Length: 158
Image 1: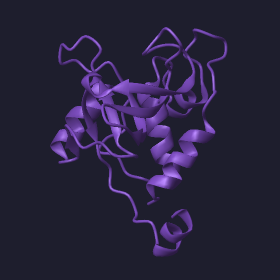
Image 2: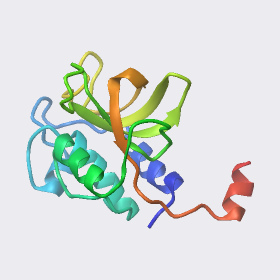
Image 3: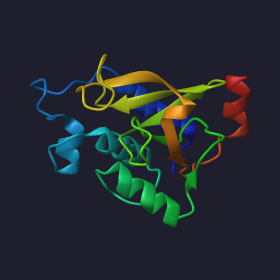
């Protein structure tokens, strides 16, 4: 099991990765998962897998991820932190639309690393990007269990 910092390092290294060809949903995360289709959850699952952080389900569905997190006691609806998997609801209809990994938290927003958005397309744009999202767009988050950072690591970062 890895620390939040290790997970975020893995996700940051993927920034700028694009589908090839554009619009195809063909990207290494979908190949790893074994399914060609919208890949925001596949990107998240890939990052957590390589960080060796357990998620409540292996899925390509935001709805299934939310349901499994709720059943596992890993679902939260506020107090987001780096490493949480936020799930968005663009239409505010209760149906999950997209997800990302929280990198930083601000007063009324989060910065997340997301698979498959683009400038002008919030959910199916074909690139790994860093996006700022308002808290009102988030319906909740999965909070996985991470290894605690060692005191030596914390002192170096201070």
